[in-house]
Image 1 (cartoon, rainbow, N blue to C red):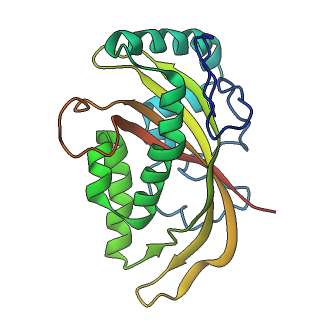
Image 2 (cartoon, one colour; image 1 turned 90 degrees about the vertical axis):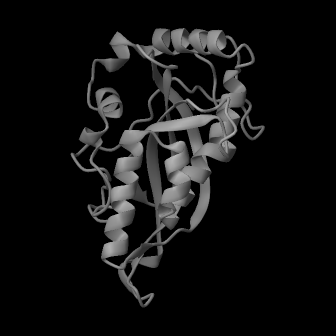
Length: 236
């Protein structure tokens, strides 16, 4: 669930007690790759773009002064602009969309390698990254385990940004419990294991889809501008 920084509303999520969504969760020490794991090895390490390839996300998670410069005031300003764009916009409804629809859909289609579905809801930066991973897997005849055991969990709105053109962008972080297992064309496990369960932390920059008012077969009115895995840890 998520809580609006400006005090204009709070998200109920799955019905549990509301959590503060404006505080960045403390990740393990950052490295340069897309996946940062204390175990230093996962089936996701070889696929995907680095955090450095996501300019907005890297400005948040690699800049220690970002919270001081932007912080809650930027979130509040972005919420106000969204209300000007869409009078019916409510942060709690946005958070519910993220928790129950957007996050599960994007991660599931990424793991399954569904480029067509991802292209509808990803901006250029996000789609280039996830599609490069999908193509690499296809070329090498490898497949990631698509199993999502739990999540999204600990959904948090950690930052936002007003854009010169287009609606504001909101950065959400969340955890998914996944299986670290990579298989070859014969279905044989070549990396990880079927019982290697990881807690994976994602960051996702999301804005209102530019075609939200058109009938183009969208699953939801949001577009993922950037996507990165911040870290993963073995589940104890």
